[in-house]
Image (cartoon, rainbow, N blue to C red; front, side, top):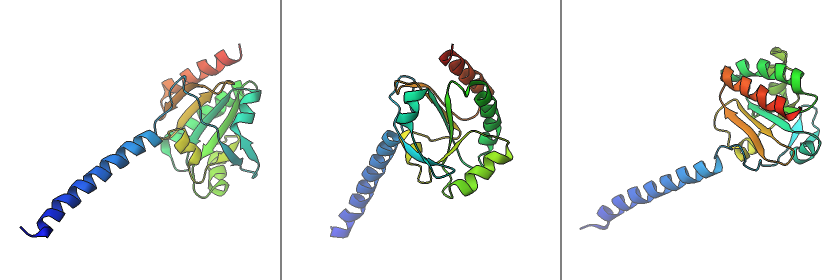
Amino acid sequence: MPAAAFREPMKTTVSLILFIALCISSTVLYAELKQGDTAPSFTLRDSKNRLVLSKAVIQQKPLLVSFYFAGCEPCKKELPEMQKLFEKHGSAVAFYLVSTDKEGAEVAVPFVQKLSVTIPVLCDKYSDAAKGFGVTKYPTVVIIGMDGTVLFAASGYHEETIALIDQVLGALHQ
C-alpha cells in the first residue's frame, strides 16, 4: 500500500483533533460568568482617553458594565433602558458601557449619543475585556459587587432582564 494512502486518514484525524481542541479551548476562553464568580479585572480607556481600572471603581461602589457594539440591534433597544437605570441608580452604582468596536470612540460615542445615552463609554477595541467576561452575545450586562464577585450576568436583550437588573441595583443601595 502506498504511503500516501496512510497520510490522508492521518491528516483528517489530526485536523479533527485540532478542531476539537480549538472548540474546547474557545469554550474555556469564553465561558460566561455566573452569579458568585469572581469578576475579571480590566483597564480600559474612556472616550476622553483616560484610564479606568475596574478594581479602583469597585473600591468605591458596585459596578455595572454593559458590553455592546455600534449596529447591534438588541443593543439599540437595551441602551435607552440602561439610561433609565443609570438615572435611577447611578449615584449608588458605577455604570460603564463597554464598546467592542474596533474603531474605538469615533464609532462608539456617536452610536450612544444618537440614542440620548449619557452613560460613560469605555473602549475595548481588541475585545480583551469582553473575552475576559466571556461575552459571546450582545448586549451582555454584568453587575459586580464591591468584593469583586458577580452579582448578576445576562446576555441578550429581554424586557424581563431590565426588571431584574433594576431589582438587583435597588437592593444594592437600600
